[in-house]
Length: 129
Image (cartoon, rainbow, N blue to C red):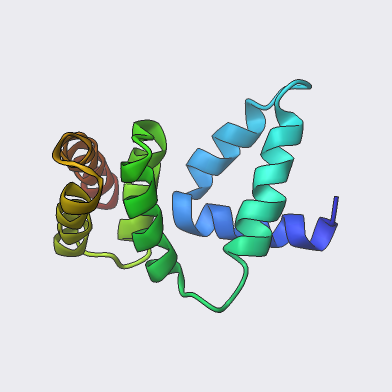
């Protein structure tokens, strides 16, 4: 493991998803799944999110589209909250999901809207918005 890349990834992960979420994921890691948590932190959050080519806001928008297309509702909810943290507006989230309806299918986009609506409400409650 590259300690510097891991540390960068841990910081990026906390910045986007919130320290509470990340600390909970890390604390609940056990001998079986801890290597996966390390991999995700180092490569996903350190190498990819740590690349300055795309700003976090752009990465969040791309993730919302990809997660909707793949019907990954749990991850979509987490990344909707992260997108809001990264400055993506509710209107931009809606536009991404509307575009997903055309390119990925209406049922996937409808599910995305259900997940995003709940995630937005939870994020706003947590952030007093």
